[in-house]
Length: 468
Image 1: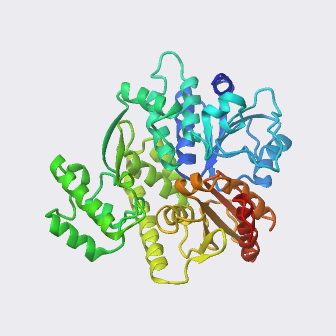
Image 2: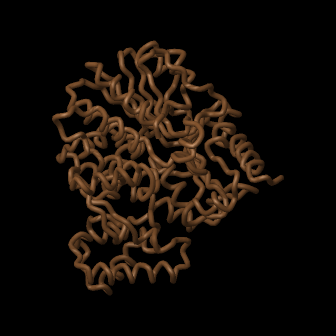
Image 3: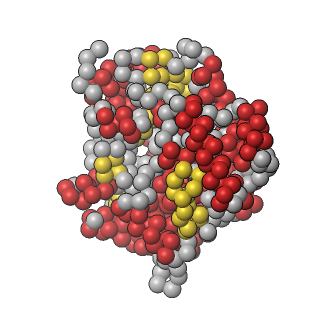
């Protein structure tokens, strides 16, 4: 990892040499925690900053940047040509998305510019840090490495920010038990920043809400108030009981009953989606790692990214509002999932994809992931939203699209690369797209949806080596 380490050290040196920075990041959990890590590190160095959370980087936005130092998190690789062309200043890109096939490599416009991205490495180092789904470390993990190098010798080394890196990794559903991610977790555990245990992956909030709004894993009880109340009455558990307040025997019994429900429903969900490793983040205002990630993600997806950044900066007074936003977005998800179940023709199937239009805002990507993981598992799932506007830079005349593919399908159907497919299909209708092989997004002009879907189905068919 010599090249990556060199880039991380170079980035830290560049940043520490400035008095002010502009921090730009993506609106999802990984993007917001990445920005949060960098903002915390900047504060501790006495470096002033202005943080902006966006949906994507556009030419007009890039051209308006006038700060001497630009730090871009969880994006930037795909826009490297625009950045090289328009920015004659110090630029640090901390990203983990594969380079767009149509965009040339990043060329620093300044000797004090650097791109940190495992997907842009070569040889053995790239093989060590990537797999068929892309980079094995997310932007938050990479930002944490930079923050560690930014620290001075007389402080804590920014190790307490590891919880944010873990939350970002949970948001992107990457493996925390291998590679650099495992090193981050082990160091955090050793320093008392994080505690790791095995149990239900439903958070630590009120048990009724946790089950009623459980969409990942997608429980059969989700959205069904009467069923949830009857289930808890049968269990002898009060509705407002906190999951964190259950003793070991109660948690074991609850786990067994929920697993039995999953098996009875024949849901496409494995036991480890419900039971597995959980992370307690001792330095954060929301201690449970999954709860923290979900609330930060909800803030970004509902256009309240400032609250998400505030949570990362440990502003405890924002927890109540963040919780409200999370319950809001979970209500939307449950509503959409209920609609998809009740309307026979809601989800349409083509030769190589499933697709549907969503009616609620702020849930496009999350909904695509749930449907791909638990409902329509045999082909990639494409979700289109004409109403979604999750960031200030999102245009009203755009249709926002998310594509997801579950890991099992990805392994069985080698060749699928949603990042490339979305880039090519959106480009065919004058839109923009990209992301990861297993999860990607796009924005296209309204009115071009049918042409886009047709093109995407053809592209994915070719990727799978099939003919229509």
